[in-house]
Each structure stands twice: as C-alpha cells, then as structure tokens.
Amino acid sequence: MRFFADEAAGGIVLAIAAVLALAVSNSPWRETYEAFTRIRGTVDIGGLLVLSKPLLLWVNDLWMAVFFFLVGLEIKREFVEGELASRSQAILPAAAALGGMAVPAAIYALINLGDATALRGWAIPAATDIAFAIGIVMLLGSRVPTSLKVFLTAVAIIDDLGAIVVIALFYTDTLSLGMLAAAGAGAIALLLLNRAGVRRADVYIAVGLAVWVCVLKSGIHATLAGVVTALAIPMRDAKGRPLAGALEHGLHPWVAFLVLPMFAFANAGVSLQGLSLDSLLDPIPLGIAAGLVLGKTVGVFGASWMMMRSGLATAPAGASTRQFVGVCMLCGIGFTMSLFIGGLAFQGLSPDFEARLKLGVLGGSILAGLLGTLVLWRQAAPR
Image (tube, rainbow, N blue to C red; front, side, top):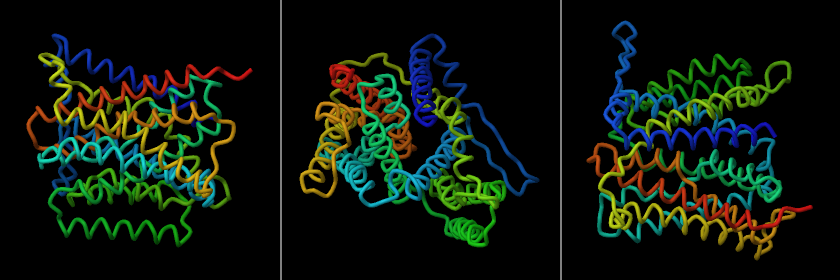
C-alpha cells in the first residue's frame, strides 16, 4: 500500500503547487515568478560538453526524465510480476487505456479541424495524471473498492506507456542522426549489461546519463532516456534481493514530493487576466477540456464495457457500475502529462498557445476530478 500512500499524499502536494503557481502568476509577483522559471543553469565539462538551459527546461528535460525513469520501473514491474503479468489481468486496463487515448484525441481533432497548428495538440487530452487520480480515490477511502484502485493504477501506467510512444513518434525536433546513433549505442550497452548479468544500479544509471545527453542532443525528447534505462535494470540483484523494486520505492517520495510539484509550479502558472467565457470556448481549450471530461469517460468506460460484454475480460470485483463510471471520469485528470505533451506540441509558438493550453488542461482536469469525485461520493460507503 506504500504506492497508494505516496500517490495520495503526492497528489495533495501536486495540487498545492499548482494552486500556488496560479496564485503567484495572477499577483503582483508575476514577474518574479516568470524570472524564476528563466533562471539559467549551465553545466560545462571541460568545454567538451556544455548544457545551458533556463530552469523551466531543466525541470522539463532532466527532472521529468527522473519521473519517466520511475514510470519505466513501474511499467516493468507490472508487466513482469504485477497486475499486468498475465493476459487475463492486462486485457481490461489495456483496452481501457487505448480507448481513453483514442476518443479524447478524436474529440480534440474534430473541434480543431481546419487549424493545422492547433491540431499539433491532438494528444494533449489523451493523458492521465496518476498522482491526482490515485490521490482522489485514496481520499474517498472505502467508497472505492481496491479492485478499482488497482484498475485505475494499471490504466494510468499503460496510459503513460502510450504517452511515451506518442512523444517518441510525433513530438521530436529535427533529428541529429549522429547523436541518435550514439543514443542507440548507449541503449544497446544497457541491454548488454543486463544480458551479462550486471546487477549494480549505479552502472546502469551512469550509462543512462550518457544516453540522456545523447537523446537530448538528438532531437528526440530527453525524458525517453529515463524509460530506456529503467527497462534495462534487472528485477533482482546478485543476491536475489529486489533491485528495480528497491529503486522504485526509493524514488517514489522524491518524485511525488519534489519532482512533480516542481514541474507543476514551473508549468501551471497562467495569467487569468482578461479571460472570459469566450476564452473557454476557444477551440484549443475547448478541445482539451472536452477530450478530458467527455472523451476519457466515454473512451475508458466504452472500451471496458465492450471487453466485458464480449467475455474477453471480467469486471473489477466488488465494484458497482456507478463506481466504475466515477473512476473512468477520474481518468480525465490530465494535468502533469497533458501539460508536458502540450509544451512539446506548442513549443516555439507564441505565449498565447501556452495560455490556451493551460486553460484547457486546468479547466478540464478540475471538472473531471470534481465530477468523478461527486459520482463516487454519492456511492454509499460499505458497512
């Protein structure tokens, strides 16, 4: 239960960081906040390697690579010895996650048809924020059966895997073939270390840092290096003790209480000055919000219903239809991953796109969270 405890508390801290960012960016300290996100940090290794970025990009490129490293460890654990280890266990959350990505993306695309620039954000509402979603179901306690908590976690993890694939395929800059080849060589080195029976995490992390630099310079988003490194780490050390699992448990508090809140604080700040109802009805925020609130519920529930109706999967034990629908609604809390994908989709465009992105993600995520909570809260807690 430590996973759920970390996610629940982490979701609260994440919410506080987001609210703080919104408050500061709409206060007299707005310029100080923006200056803070632009603080430049430089790493210079003898002139051979020079990385100079503002704080916002260090958070999004390096800190989020740590988050994706943790995601990679969770994905590996679930598929090797967890809830997704067998086909019968994996088929329902896998279908739900795919439906929960396809339908929101389709809704966003329909609302933004005819605007090629806006269509770059089609994947924004396809993501689920596991910290917020798990945080809410944990706060609801016995109103949400354990089977649905496991289902939601599995859906969010597969959703993250889908987001990784989307980022790799669709959100890359101009590729540097030389650095891409070097990153590939690093990935092969990680695989060879695994095959050779190396059981020291520090060796994998050292090679993973080199892969991160190569991926960063290649044009593919650097966070993918975190996933590649995590998937190469053996499940157990030379003495048979958990290795990947120990790393996962050690990283959870750091990611939950530092990495993700810092990401939220650096990315969630948006000025609400001058916004009106017309701003909410702009195609970009409307497409994002509709995708998160409507698309996620329809996609996750619809795909799950078809799998259960066909007999290919069974419903989560002890869960009513109302509870299942409420959890499907909570999948519409996109926040962290939606902001992250949106930042890649609209990178280099005017600040207006960033404002519309944040408005849609925050509005849609808040509404999805409130609706899901309301549906689950009205479900009487079992005696």
